[in-house]
Length: 109
Image 1 (tube, one colour):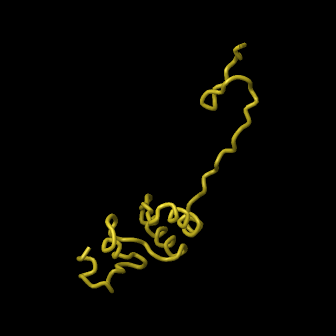
Image 2 (tube, helix red, strand yellow):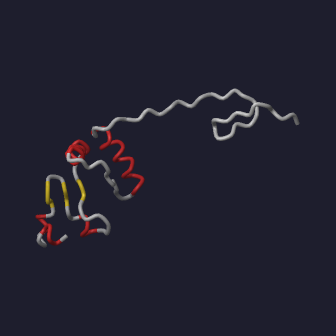
Image 3 (cartoon, rainbow, N blue to C red):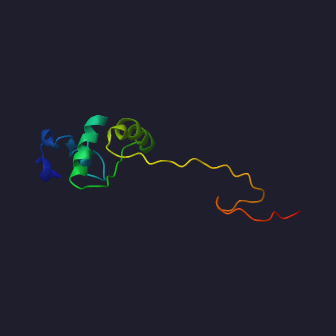
């Protein structure tokens, strides 16, 4: 990491919104995209245009950062929202196995 900033803290921004100071305060990744939702989304979209298709997003505390990413970042990303199938009503009698198999006969007890 020292090679990226030459030991000077004012050189920790190594590219627009790409900060190399994370490794100085915790382990793990040595750089981080920083900024508000639209700014970070713009950088991620630039990387995607270069062919990068997978990103590891992390933050601390994990749960709170997951919500922040979902609320502040995801709405600005150029990604399609997958359709979530609606649950179907099962009116059959008997035990339903694996949500798709419905028994043909109901045991009399």
